[in-house]
Every structure is written in structure tokens, then in C-alpha cells.
Image (cartoon, rainbow, N blue to C red; front, side, top):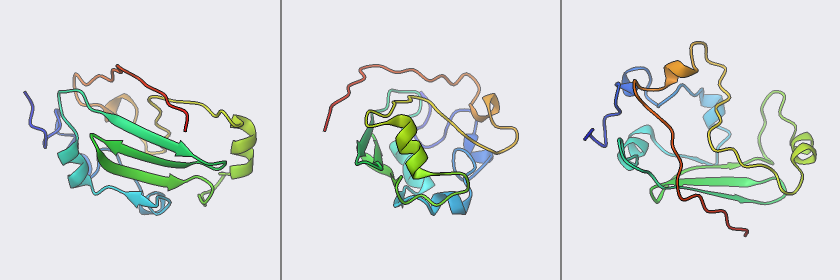
Length: 131
């Protein structure tokens, strides 16, 4: 079984995080886990429990990996080119949407190359609770 600290395929060798993130992107988060702490929390080669809380008209999104807080972002406070919180709210409505695996990344070469050899994404036991 692979080590919990070392991702299969040495993803860590490409970047100090699992995929490149610019400082101005990280600055949009209220909280962002340190990469080493994320790597300690993630169970490589095993199931992980991911919890996401989405709350508010302009949602505050908080996520945990195996009980360890990973990220929190206030979508109403995001200041980024081409992001319009009112347009997003109007488009999504009160119900919004749920995306299980989405990556919008401007870095060249990302895509299938972001995955370790033989890596897969699978989901099980999905629960959705209304707050």
C-alpha cells in the first residue's frame, strides 16, 4: 500500500502543492490548508471522506478532508477578474449546483497530466443534507 505522505507517481515533484496555485488565488480563501498538512490528511490508495458545507446567499464554502479543515472561501467576497457574484447568483439560483470533480485551471499542460499514473476518481456513499 502506498505511503499516506507520498502520492503515487510523485506528484509532489511537480509542485509544492498537488497542482499549481498562484498566491493571488490562495489570497481569495479565508483559510487554506498548508500542503504538508493536506498530504498528511489524505489517504493515498484508500477512500477519503470529503465534507463540504455551503451556506449563504453568496455561499461560504468550507471543506474538510478526513475531518481536517482544508479550505474556506466566501464567494461573496471574491475579487478576481471576470467573477461577478451577482451574475453567479442569478445563474445558479437558490439551489445552485453540485459538481463532484471540477478543475478550472489556466496552467498549460494541466488536464490528464495532472493525475498520477493509474490514478482514478471514484465516489461512494454520497449524502446531501439541507442546512
